Each structure stands twice: as C-alpha cells, then as structure tokens.
Image 1 (tube, rainbow, N blue to C red):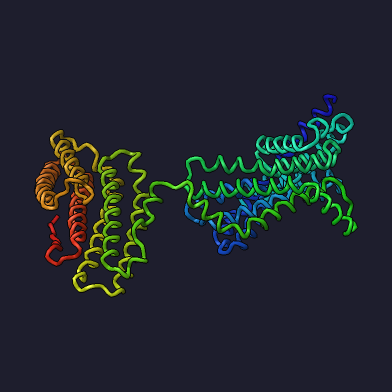
Image 2 (image 1 turned 180 degrees about the vertical axis):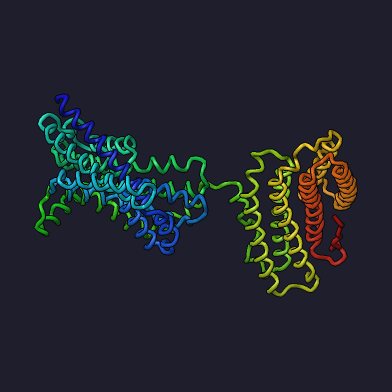
Length: 550
C-alpha cells in the first residue's frame, strides 16, 4: 500500500463527505418549508407517512436529517407517535436511493464529464443568488459534482488497493466474521455521521474489489444500523414521545438487520437471479444496492401488521409523572350501573385532580425556576384528567340514579371547575415572576413573602387526603388570608401613591397578588365541595359557595 493509495482514499472520502454535506444542506435550503409541510400535512395515514418519509429522504439524501426533523416535530407536538413511526419506515427505504445513485452514475458514466459542469453551474448560482432558493439549489448542484468526484477518486483508489487487501480475509469467515463486519459498518456510519455516505463508500469498495459481495452485504447491514446513533443522540432531554420515535427507529433497524443477516445468502442469490432474469449484469455494487433496498422493504412488511402493538408497547415506556397522572385510575364504566360505586370512583378521581392542582400551585408559589418549568406539562395532565372526569360525569348523568344523588353530579362538575382554575392560576403565577421582584421596601417585601407563605401552607393542608384536614379550619384560615390580602393591597397602593413603587410594577404586582389569593380561594372551595361528595350526596352535607370581592 503506497502513499498514493492512502492519499486517494483519504481525499476521496473527504470529497465524498463534503459533497454529501453541500448536497444535503443545499437541497434542504431549496426545499424551504417543504420538509415541514410534507411531514406534517401528508401523514394522515400510515401509508402516506411511509411515502412522505421516503420522498423526503430521497430529496435531501439524508435519513438522519429526516429522522431528526421528525423527532423535532414530535417534540413540538406537530406529529403524533403513529405518524412519526410511519415516517421512519419510509425514511429507511428512502436512504437506499443513494446506493442506486452511486451504482447508476459511479460505475457507468464518465463522472468528470458531468461533475465539473455541475460544480461550475452550481457555484455560479450560489454566487449570483445568495440566500435564495436558487442559491441553495446551486449549492446542491455543486455538492452533487463534488460527490461524484469523491466517488471517482474512491473508485480509482479502491481498484488499486484490491491487489493488496481484501477485507473479507482480514476478519475471517463464519458468523463471527459477519458480526465483526456489521460492527465495522456501524462504526463507519457513526464516524461519518451519514448512513448514505457509509453505504456509498461500501459500494465503491465492493465495486473496486476490496470487499467481496458477502462481506459488503454485512457491512451494509451495519451501516444501516448506524443511523440509530443519530436518533439516540437527538432525543437526549426530549419529550417522551420523541424518545419513543427514536426507540421505534432503533427497533426497526435491529429487526431488519437481524432478518437481513439471517437471510443474507438467500437474499443475495435471489437478487442475482432476479437481475439475470431481467438481463441485467450482476455487478457487486448493483447487487448490494438491491440487497439494501430489499431488506428495508422486508423490514417494513414484517413490522407493518405489528405497528399497533409496537405503538402500545412504546406508549407504556418513557412515561413521565405528568403522563401517569393524566391517566384515570378509578373511572370504571362497568360500575356506572351501580351509581353509589360510580360516585365513589368519581370522588376518588377528583381527589387525584385536587392533589395535582395543589402540587402545581405549591410549585408556582415556591418560585423556583426548575420547579416552575414543570408546571405547563402538569397543567396539561390536569386538564386531560378533568376532561375524563367530565365525560364520566356525563355518562353517569345519563344513567338512572337515585333522587338523593341528583345534587351530586353538579357538585362534581363544580369541583372540576375549581381545580381547573387552580391549574390555570398556577401557570399565571409561575409566569408572572414580577410578583417575586423586590418592592423597594423591606417591610413590603417581608409582608408579601409572609402572605405567599401562608397561602402555600393553606394549599398544602386543603385536601381531603391530608390526615388532619378540617373544612371549617381551612375556611376560617381563608378568611384571615383575605383580610391579610386587603391589608397588603392597601399597603401597595399607598406605596404607589407616594411614588415608592412605579405604576407599571404596582399594577403587575397587584395582578400577581390577586392570582395568589385566588389560588387559596379555589383550593379551599374545591376541597370543601369534594369533601361533601364523600358524604354520598346528602343534601344537608352539600356546602354553599361563597364569594369574596377582590
């Protein structure tokens, strides 16, 4: 192996990767919002999702780019888990297009005759139309030209290297040798961060005689598995649904890889026989491109009927506290025929709503940044659980219930409304950080902090799950809090009238303070009316709603 060979190999790989980078970035820029629009609007059915994933990957020549974009859309709530999984199926098929491109152009066309004009025209467009789609398209054209030059350089380098090295003889035969080749292919994709680039390198090496056909097939399987590394890295710190998409991507590639290795000799023979029937030459690069396509199609065919089960399995994993909280635990439709049991289930679920609402309120009142960041997700969980309670209440209302329970269902809906408001107020208090700002007066700051601390204490104890909960004691404490609120409000207004507190800051602080006070009121009311439900709806046990002027 001479320095010239090493230089050709390193330079060819460098040109190839540079071309792939320019081509992918240019095509993505030329497409504009097409990637987002196609993925979001054209994934209503599983089949259309597969087609969208295939087309987008074929367009930008990067399954990793499409996979990462899909994970991002799931993270943002633009795609559902089922839609995203279908896109990953299509993306894995779409990544095989590069192999056919390399086979069609790299081994049958005078590459330099088309590469140099592409580079020249592409860069001219890039310089003339800076920042526009035409400029991005020019960058993609130049990338194609450099991509083809890299293929040509790699091909010439591998052709010379074939006289000195044959990779299959270095790793040995048998299953251990095949597995080692899979690891090498995986590592190549991780190294160059593109399965398309890794596949093209493998095809070029196979076409140059450095890698025999069976070894090349094992390398292709490994390179296909290597795409999972990008997806795994992309979901660090992401939402549970995004992690599930990455897990589906990994599962798909592991299953297809295992099937491809198991059927490797049969698939290669079938592809060679198929090409012979079509009067096509069975050149190694073309056979490998076909192998890559066939085993990805086979993987989709195998997983297609199992997708529903896969989605259910994924949904049971990577669960967060909020997702677990949003799932009803007691609302059993089978007991609706027995109203008293259904009432017990409803009261227990509303108690869970109260626990979530009070947790969110305490997080908001604590004022810690990390704690506040979890409030929006918790509020969504609370809203989902409240919706489930509302649906269950309607079902119970349509059933025949005893007359003594007539007043119970309106009370249940009232409790739902109170706890919904607590969740909404918690978000408002958490986002209104100005209420935590210093007011320029130590006495006012201390008075404000003491008021917030008292509200937090009341919220912590205003729950029927609290051992020493007393509706009368909490109601009496709320009256004292309302008096404190009026005194604090008067002090703030006085400070504003004397110019000690700017008008804008005064208004923001008063609004924030009012929301804090309302958290206490709604929490107390929710607990009081929920407590009455546990008295099985006796009319004399149902409390009356009180109102307090703010």
